Length: 98
Image (cartoon, rainbow, N blue to C red; front, top):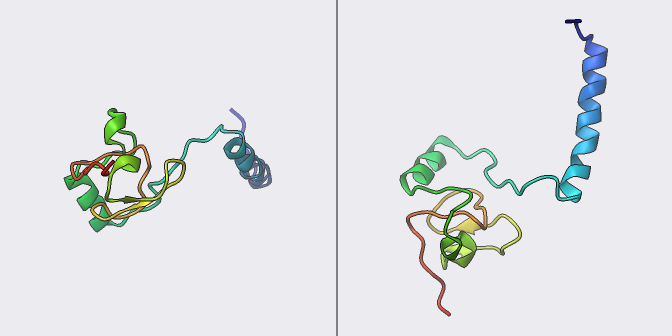
């Protein structure tokens, strides 16, 4: 195994960073909403069993009355702190009125 010089490492890192927007623009990336929640936020999210991708589509955050946002971007929630994925779910789910 050969060692990589700092210059080569920097060149590879720049290549990866330059290509990242292309993957997101082409649908190669998946919507990420977690960010960096604080320890307190993580505790609340865990206590409410929040997950970014709920198996039951009828209980997705985008269908909850506590969710503020749309189905294509990260939103916020009155019960769960931090960025919320529209396909997420938690124990505080309250269906929107029809």
